[in-house]
Amino acid sequence: MQINQYNVSVMEIEVEDDEELIKYLKPKLPLLKDYLLNLKGNVTQKLKNFLDLNHIQYTTNLDIGSLKRARKQKRSGVDVYDRVVRSGEEIVTDNSVLCLKKVNDGAFIRTKGDFIGIERVDGVIESEGDVLIFPKGPKAKIIFHRHLLDNLTTGATYKIALVDEEILIEKIKD
Image (tube, one colour):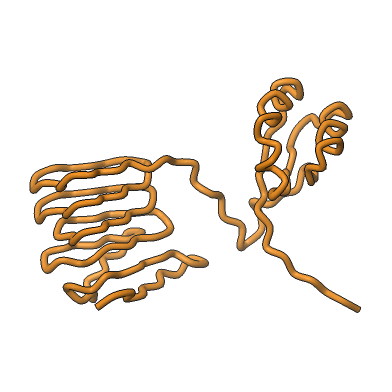
């Protein structure tokens, strides 16, 4: 017996109109070769022929969401701030946030996505994303998935991630 285990990127698509879906997929064919498509709904023979002809791997009507380890990827963009985020400024977004300059004490950033700070963070960061990366300043307050992380050393750079519903904290630079 031989057993192989794979981690696969799956793209789940609700099929409503096969012509519209084929039109959408055509320019993306080179990218789709690295995905397994899980088609839900009315999958016509025409759509199956199109995917087979273009060597796209697919399956139909799998209930991937019910798997314990399945996580839906967020489809948000990234808000980039190439300036200092000033005291009193409030940023609230569904997107991920990339701050290229300092986040001052008194600034507040709440994101449903990831947060990455390149320079020192002294403000309040509240994130529900998968990862935070930032150098912690002395006045920073970090809230990750509704947990206040108050045991972080000032001056260190951290990577904080949510893995299998567990918060992992890694100091990546002192």
